[in-house]
Amino acid sequence: MKKGEKKEERELKHAVAQDYETGEVLMLAHMDEEALRLTIETGKAHYWSRSRGKLWRKGEISGNEQIIKDILIDCDEDAVLLKVKQIGGACHTGYRSCFYRRINGEIVSEKVFDPEEKYGKKDDK
Amino acid sequence: MKKGEKKEERELKHAVAQDYETGEVLMLAHMDEEALRLTIETGKAHYWSRSRGKLWRKGEISGNEQIIKDILIDCDEDAVLLKVKQIGGACHTGYRSCFYRRINGEIVSEKVFDPEEKYGKKDDK
Image 1 (cartoon, rainbow over the protein chains, first blue to last red):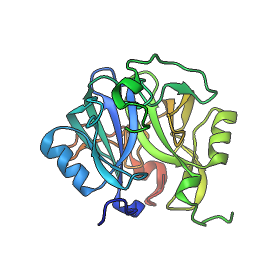
Image 2: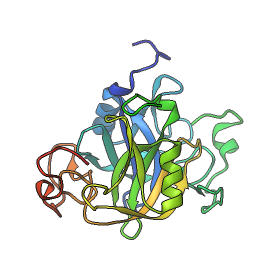
Image 3: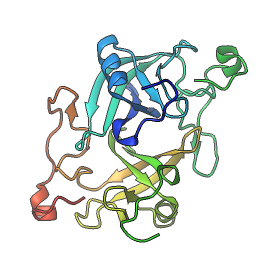
């Protein structure tokens, strides 16, 4: 498959990353087979970016890696739960978790890093 | 939209349900706009079933409802995190969480109900 090409949804698993100590849910992303294999082999979270059409390693730009502590799989085997040690913050906006707001918009978290310092002004995870 | 018709993926949000007290991740499902609206209005989790092509209320058959305690939304607004009080178990197999196994198959949880008793022999959530 060429870089940038869309993968079929059925080729991907959902991946939920959760802080292995606090239980905080950090983010939701997707994995293809290679991302899952690399995650298991290297002990660091790899994902498939649906928007960019490519494999990425969490923290490859920001340094905010996810060190794998455990990997669970769900009943119908289309989702995995990664228990991770999160370096820095998981969210490209600077928050520890991507779930930093209530559905009504109220912010329930604090920024842990400055995204411009980590990524420059480019909107990139 | 007719019952059973496939929705486009972009019309759906991912929904992660998490025990509001223990932090245990219980399941991953999807919501269309109506499921999210009903979840907010009724205080009970509703989802869109991609396989059955219909809206469903968690626990409508089993009684294993999810009482909403909080709803968070992620940075790019395509995923919600439901903090819930889970009645009984979340998984149609009888486990508390759908994530009851390690990726290598090892069971890390115990059954909390008998699925045949709840659903009959039909494989239905």
